[in-house]
Image 1 (cartoon, rainbow, N blue to C red):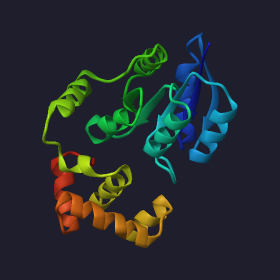
Image 2 (cartoon, helix red, strand yellow):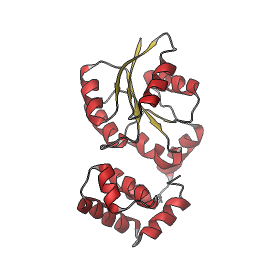
Image 3 (spheres, one colour):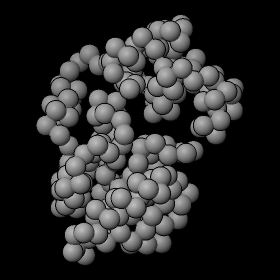
Length: 209
């Protein structure tokens, strides 16, 4: 029996994923969580074979949870499920230790296929992402946003979507001063000075919808 834990902050999404997976006779969802705290509590107490993890969660992001999971459970396969297109997060999460990346628009059978692939020790990615990873490894010049930390990248995308410092601080459970510090750092790394430049860059590189 393949034992799965689902981490997603939307009850409807969790219910849908559970229904898809449990239509398979050899798959069982043994736990569900809606945030980082719940996720680690369940994963530390219930044996599982893989985790299906949403990248956008309240508080700690899916990327942060992924890194902590790989630190504690190096061999535990984690499939990242996201509303974001591959070009925005996939390379970043695969480098952080994810076993696969799937968008929420994917067909149900693709979810099952991905689970079976990562359980067997493989990686589940699209052919276009595979090419992107190879290019990234071989290329000497990388996009400027690749220099950013995960938190800086997250804040850059939020700024690009027009969110104010106060709103970003509320959503990420950070102080406004901390968010401003991250903004200053990412502007330095990106060789920019204004939010307008961030927005232009994010749109050009398809980093926001």
